[in-house]
Structures are given as structure tokens and as C-alpha cells.
Image 1 (cartoon, rainbow, N blue to C red):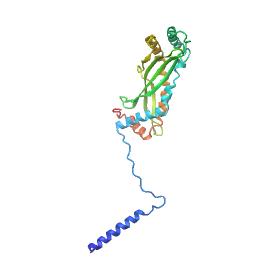
Image 2: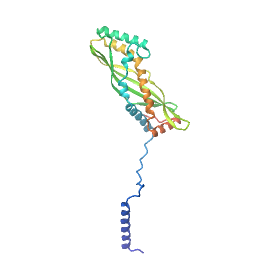
Image 3: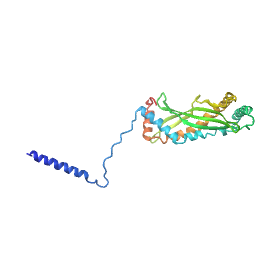
Image 4: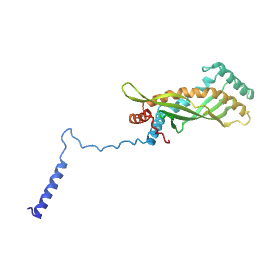
Amino acid sequence: MFSIGGLLVFCGLLAQTTAQLGALPLPVGQALPLAVTPALPSGPTDLAKGLTSGLSNGLLSGGLLGILENLPLLDILKPGGGTSGGLLGGLVGGLLEKVTSVIPGLDNIIDLKVTDPQLLELGLVQSPDGHRLYVTIPLGLKLGVKTPLVGSLLELAVKLNITAELLAVKDKQDRIHLVLGDCTHSPGSLHISLLDGLGSLPIQSLLDSLTGVLNKVLPELVQGKVCPLVNGVLSQLDVTLVHDIVNKLIHGLEFVIKV
């Protein structure tokens, strides 16, 4: 039998040996085990927020605001410009007549400048069958109407929603993807309001004429710029996030609760 004193000596030697082993260098090629990183939460709300956050960040980093700020509105609104020059030419011609009748000597020159473009909070809903997602992309900007002699005539606030349909697909190699389906402007989502205008002019008549032109031109113009950008962003989303979302869409599982 060990005496109590012998047991104490044994424990002391064991502690000293353990400390010395801990101080020895590790063999070449061997490292201490890394702390395990906890998996990202993949609950329904987390997936929805992860998707909208990824899309928002991707659109912004892809130059969305610069694209909006450089919309070629003036070129398209010129008589004969755009893809439907006859119709637009007549509309713009009527607008120019209204302006030049009030302020002689404008020489039919109007400058349309987009400022303060914004990407507002994205919305996300799931189709009733659970197999598709619809992302609402709300955009805001200011539109300044200027002339060389008078300067600023009008400043308008413009809001427009683009709706992108997202589909889950699986290729022949059983790889799953999130792809863009229909992408268009939401009907009736274009809103134009007057922020500022010269009181001495018939502002309402001018505003009505300009609004009529923008209603025919602006939604399709923005749609043509934004939708290809959305398509590019989808290919850059986090792989794990896309995998979890697509798996739920393929099986028709509801996961969009609230964003």
C-alpha cells in the first residue's frame, strides 16, 4: 500500500511531467485542432433574410446606383429616340410646345438629370405552391428638369418596383441552382410626385405631360438595366444559402415567414 506521502509525491511528478510535455514543440506537419465554427443558422427567417441581404449587397456592389444615375432619359425622350420614336416623338413634342409657349427662347432643349438613386428594402414572398419566390426590388430617385435660360423647372420624386421571379432548378448532374425567371416592373408601381417647381409656371400642366411620357418610357428602361444585374447577382450568392433555399423550393416547403 502506498503511504499518503508517497501518493502526494507521485501526483506532483505526474503534474510536472504533463506540464513539460505541453511545452514541447509539435512534430512537423501537426497542428493543434482548430475550434469548430458553428454552422450558420438556416431557419426559415434566416434563409429569407440571408437571401434579401445577399441580393441587396450584390446589387449595390454591382453598380445599381450608378446605373440608375446614368439612365439615358434625355436621349430616349428626344423625338425619334428610343424604340418607339413615333409615339414618343409626338408626346415629347407636345411637352416641348407647352414649355416653350410659357418660356420663349428655350430652343426645345430640356435637360433631365437623375439624382439621389436609392435601393429601398427588398420584399420577398413565396408562391402558393411553394416552388417559386418573388422578390420586390423598390427603387427611388429624383429627376430634375432644367433649361439653359431658366435653370431648374421641376424636381420630381420617382419610385418604381421591379419584381424578379426566382426558380429552383436541378441539372442533369443533380446540381441545384437558383435562377431568374420573369423579371419585370410591377404594374402600377411607378409613382411620380412633385418636389419643387417654379410657381410662375403652369406646373401642373407641365407635370402631367412629363408624367405621361415617363410612364411610357421609364419602367421598361429601368427593367432593362436592373434585371440583367439581378441575374448576375444570383450566381454570386453563398453556395450553402442557395442549397438550403433550393432544397426547400424543390420540395414545395414554405419558408418565407416575414422579412
